[in-house]
Amino acid sequence: MGRASLWKFPWLDGWHIFGTIHVDAVVFGPAKAGDKLAYSFVCAGCRFWPMPEVWRLEVKALWLLRRAEPGRWCSAGGEPGDAGARSMEDLDDFREYFRKWRR
Image 1 (cartoon, rainbow, N blue to C red):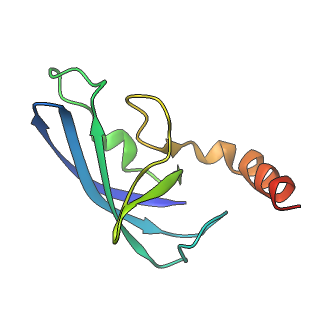
Image 2: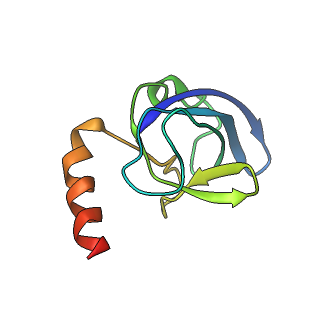
């Protein structure tokens, strides 16, 4: 979980969103609290206008990410338009899921 600092630009294949996720804590995965993860996301499902409201992602959130390439992370969500951010209200559900999954 952490807070993102993001910027965006339009391109032929959709909106490109880049930035840094400042990690506060980790529920599952190799990242550690205090890490700064380089983040990238191509929102092919976003409308060209109005621009995507990336400020909605710049709050403390649970981030479901996968390694895209060395040094860069992207959304682990499987749907177009899924940036990977989840509400902090879902934290207990994710902790329970990963606790059971590790068994």
